[in-house]
Length: 565
Image (cartoon, rainbow, N blue to C red; front, side, top):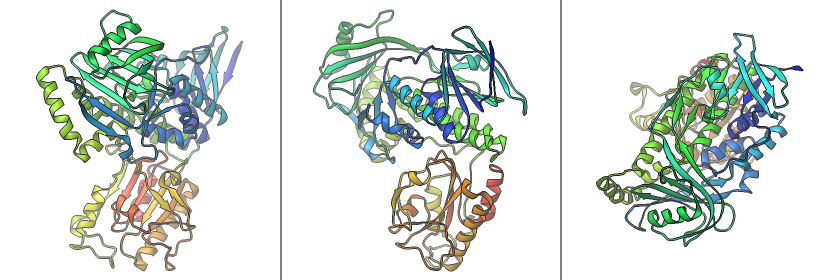
């Protein structure tokens, strides 16, 4: 029997990446179908470490709360050297700029089941026992044809406007579009174990022990004394056993602990790789189909969820005819660079530092790490690198910013003039740039409601923040109101505007009947470098799309014209 189906997006692979994409697409009004070769959900062994940035993404489409109930919250990461039980550094997640200052340890099967339930609740279709046999790429308005083979032998032709391969490191989709997988480093070997661990350390932390033979990472799991153990460079060609693992831990971990009650033990080889492209025409790659990362830091699953969060809002706008198709070009540009950041940037540099083999190099590392870790800015920088909060799209061609010309700035600051001073210009330059993730902050509306900036920016729309700055002038109020009205008249709810006033109540002379944020203590202005009038446009994925100082309607409209219709 030959069937025919026509979703907007066909997602191949029902792991966390594919299911997160289904959730995000559904809330953007995109008809989505997920197909999975396995006949039933696969209970993948291991633990997913959901980093703070990924938790922000999951919260945006309603999948975080049910996961919190079945996860272990980890509050910090502790680093120990090879020479003894002295702790080298403690990275506190509580210092991070996020509503979720922790890492969540949870079973991958729980993540997948939660996302599958949420995707179906939002209207997506998930089919198991359906394998992608071949792809015929569409051209222009012609849809892509996917030949699907069901477990019972039936063939089906699915026509979709777009196809997204979320089908893992051996991706059939990637092979079908002939995109090579480039190795980034040598093959790494690990043992993983889910066991009971009886030791003296607190159960709401992560621990990394650095040794001559490699690192050992221990993370608490839900349940009393339960832990996930990751051991790098185990004995070659040897399968893990509880007795052997206990022996190796006694050698590599200076803090004694007794292992028991193994739920599973596994031996895995990982070779970090990166796809040469993340897009070919109407076909996209995400998650492990696009990149494979080292287990240290848990970046694999997290990067996959963030891949699809970047893609979903763009597909949604193009599908609804609200954005130009060229918007989709930015997915490959932005997310491939993010993957390179993991493999070449701070996360990988930190990982290499943890894996030093020479005794002199290890000694220097162990001597310097406590000194550097006590420097607050460095500690926070490393913590942000591991949490993925610092990922930025500053180099993307999709983002844009404008600054007050140096020769057009005042020499000194004035609260009676809208003209930015040299100091105002510097404050703006140091604030979140175009491409950066929006910082977490509390705001108060003119109705007296205290909310999170994350609440205001949750949805399928762009958010425009018009900052008044320190100068409460009638001219400034008129300018902000004119910008807000022009954007509302042209884009309606597609761009939601808030005028931000550094006062306890909205001024009577502000000719704006729309939403107002009352920044009574000026904290939000300071976070955004807004001592002088300026504007920030925030994308649906909570990254800054555009900013300018001063607030200028013309440059904002010109930017929006090249993105939205």
